[in-house]
Image (cartoon, rainbow, N blue to C red; front, top):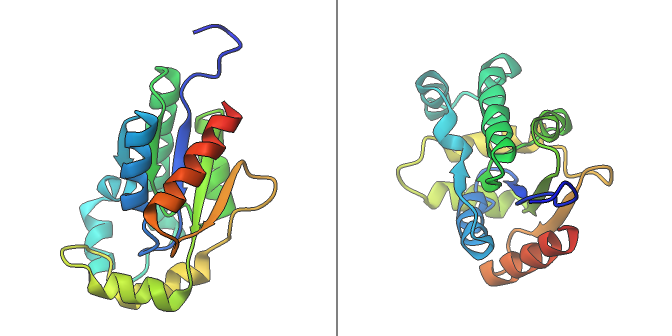
Length: 174
């Protein structure tokens, strides 16, 4: 790798619960031949239990989780590995933290309407996030802004359409 080579990208697939982050992230990681990371796996047992009981996380709950994610991004970018991570990344200042952790962190925002997100979350089994918390995700959501590197796509579009658009966009910035 030369000093002008930015190295492999670090792509954060973001959006509310039920937007398809994990599914899209896994497919995107395969297409880009990058490791896939799941931010939900970084949540503490206490946070998982709180959400499973129907209580949204507050900023104090999220802080250690966000710092752990930033550490994963930092490690992946410093070792030249890159990666794709599925993470809600709902707020602009969370994404600022992630960009500080890894220069070149790029976001794929899966925009989705509330009704579809709620239906998807209600229909999945074995996940700690109940459908009753989808509204709290929309209350916290700050969509990707023009000053943030990334792409907004329709989270209800077909998987191949979403992944193809993301691959094209990532390849353009590399």
